[in-house]
Length: 224
Image 1 (cartoon, rainbow, N blue to C red):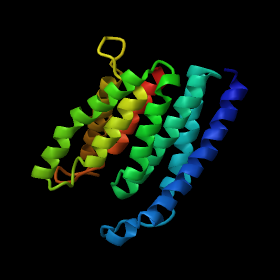
Image 2 (cartoon, rainbow, N blue to C red):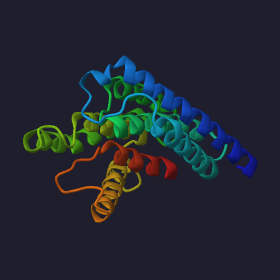
Image 3 (cartoon, rainbow, N blue to C red):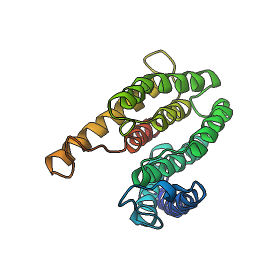
């Protein structure tokens, strides 16, 4: 793709990223998140919706356009990127991954699987099952040991979504869901170490895991 088209696609990503931020605010109100907000949790517009999501949208769209060109694959992967940004923004702000986002996305991913580049309905279903089953023990352990304040059931559902949009075939060339989960774990580990080293985080603190899963999924989609 030419440089001009990459810039135009990046601009579109910024606009749509801003729209994703507006969608986060709509969900915040419609899901009545503020009714059980934690002390210090901010409601309403913030830097996440106004700055972070448009920047990530622009960067992600530009990177995908440069790597994948003007193809059907670019359109499909850009759609998944926008949904992943919605999950990332909401989880960063509220530590929640909403069913109203993950369930429709999972269904849409399965419906589009036959027409998605490198996917089939079989590999999408296998990916969804694999992603959910791998993350399920972490959610159970979190319920027992951290009373649900760590790894949550929303992360399990997000794992299923990531599996459905990346696909899983049990051969060396098709382990995309596995690579996405591993990449997410590695990103999470690096960020956690940096936060501990800079004393922005203590061993008693918990951080949302959804953004790391989103990062892993984005990396795999980039290379698909």
